[in-house]
Figure 1 (cartoon, one colour):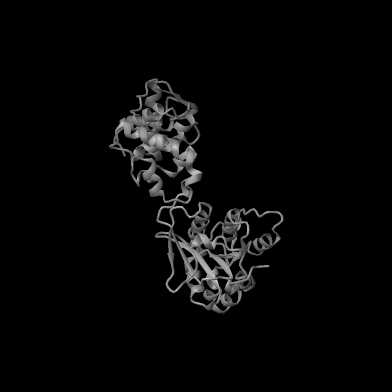
Figure 2: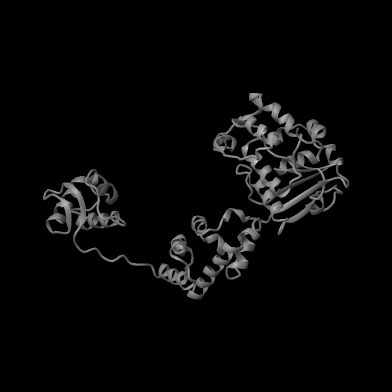
Length: 368
């Protein structure tokens, strides 16, 4: 709080509030200025009165009461532009970005200190190329994508805010922030290839005799979150990209064919959590694998939906807040998937609930 009449403090606060505006509304203005400037209301009123009497402010009475649209009449100091921000703007314009693209990337400069103009121009050129090529790079490691597009650095992509990338037209979520691992396990001549959403369920299946009849495929990576369905989404992304950049591991004791060969198998099923997000992952996979079916391992999970102690609502504590409002679009002719989606519209079951006996019983069959 300023002692005396805080004219400069209130003046600076008014200037800041006026950014992008032609006037301020009078109602509640004194309270708003007091809060923003950390001054008391009486001091703010006195400062407004002084500013009005000096001719710097319009819409304020001689006693400091705002009575109309409050406008600045006097001099406003020019806002200083950070040299780094100015350099980034020069780089964007020199690479022929349009005004919308410049606006999208305008907030990216703060993490680029120490770079010369030529380096910044190269980053802008890399962003343009990445925007053009991103569909072919989906599923790759963000570090790999960054190193290929931004000065040979694996980290530069990560310092550009996601909201800036999105506004520019690049979807950052399609690039993995960790090395993607694919783990394969099972027998040499599987009856069925089962794509498993979560690695814990993969291990559960591999511990049963179902591994002598089936091949199981899952994906994992350091930092992946089950709460955000990252394992299943990574699996879908890897399948859609043909496993480009993936590190494939064979589980100890397995004799199944390589992962790319398994994807040519005539019978492939998907087993994930019984919830809207799990169904959405299945539908993403099916775009790339038309022969894909839901696993019969969903049968015991459907039964659990009707048992309150074995199913859960979509709330923060279950890691599924927001899924109750999730919009998942099924093909009109896919009655099986649509029916399953309706069944899990309000409660879900995680795949880890399936017992070893049920895994052995249902792993090689399809959900009908």
